Image (cartoon, rainbow, N blue to C red; front, side, top):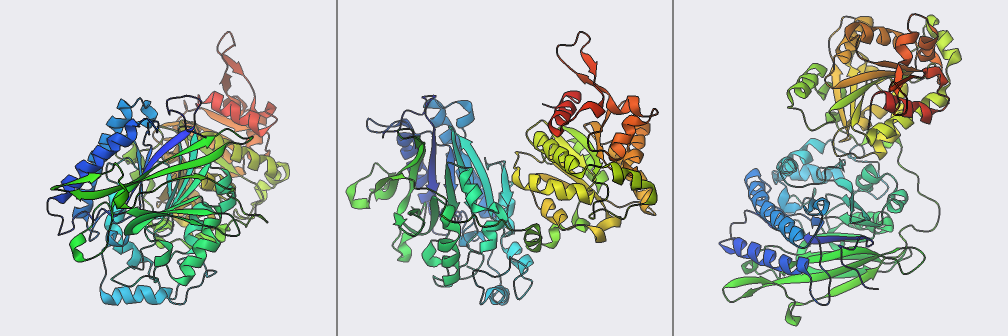
Length: 633
């Protein structure tokens, strides 16, 4: 059972290092930090190059388990960015020299915050936050609804500079979702043929002063807001990793129970720091052995009298194919640092420094018994703050202008407008008498299947989805949006402030996703006026390639006409298989020619083959035709 050279195309392997506790900006740094940085890079050169008993190690991921800064202020995070940027740049060079392909040269930096990464509040505020968590049990309601006081803004203020640091120009994973506590995150890293699932949880939001060990907290709802179902999360990944700053011993009884009896049941490796001593902990239990790696401090002031060990951990995850099923194997090496004369040295290992190396053949992730239910949309919505609510969203015209000028966050360059609803669905407003024929002809299940298939296709394409938030559509798309994590926002949701009292609970949940950009529409004297203005504005949206119409009632026809009047050259495509007003567009001689369009095919002599929308009998065929028609790749 020996790992192959990572350049072997048949081999599946991912390399990683675990750093922790840099404390950038510590007053007692002196001139030692540059020495430690040089020693770290020198040892990374040895790790990447390999040796006679160990093949090269391409470093794909750098896990950082907190205490990046010392007082949690912007200046310190700037210093950390400079140092980490140099280290990550050198790793890229080392990976390149060792033969890594371009896709694996730049390592991803995956951090969680520590107790030195927050700006400590006043005693009064710290006491207010702690009082809100007093007596919290492992089955309490989700944060933040289950607290005795509304302290979420106070906690978020403590971590404001850390959250701003996540926008610094460092190679953080692009596809990462945010949780309900600042710094919580989850992502999937797919490198070297290994699919790694990573969850990072903030364990420091109660470490507001020099409180003793055993008082910190991790909440079950933190994990559930990111993963939603631990069993399915584990099954989707070869290896799962949990990152926290604090070790289990630093948590309260409730926090340890949440960790051991819930979260770690579907986690393979738990990485943490804070104690500065380093080590590997294997904990047997009813659901198999779980492995924890306690990181050594990258930099700490030893003269304070604390027994701290410097260093880092390096490792690889690889898949052993000796059996019927590939077995994930984790190799890990401690790389201690020590003072040698007038300089610092990291590795090679010597016995006096507490060396260890280990190999782990991972056991089954999933515990026996029924799969625990995923949290409901209502539970997820309860944990969201006011910053996900509609009045705080940017105005639609501001978003459109930013996209036109290229000043908006990175998004898709092309957009497809979806005009759809499920006629008769109770989530939508009351049905008008003139809409009853569309309710009778609608096929709700087919509409839902088509919406889901279209969203999944667009998530993996070069084109984004723009829609105006009909409740029956948002409700059906929410599960797809919750499971898709893309490198840049691929969904734009527009809601009119006129309807803010009628928003369904899925809206704030969707609004909290990194994949979704939400915008609000303010103008309009009444409902009809608002909808008319919105439709004209949508038709002129930057990068719009066309519009597609599925199901729906009379408003579908109004949008079809508005798009035709505003942008007559913009393609409009109606699908008949779900019934409703969209099917009526294909039967009306006035709109039939414009509604079904022509679908490009490579083998047709003229390059275009008319294919009426009413003949697409399955949702999958209809979505394929949409992508073909609008050249969506």
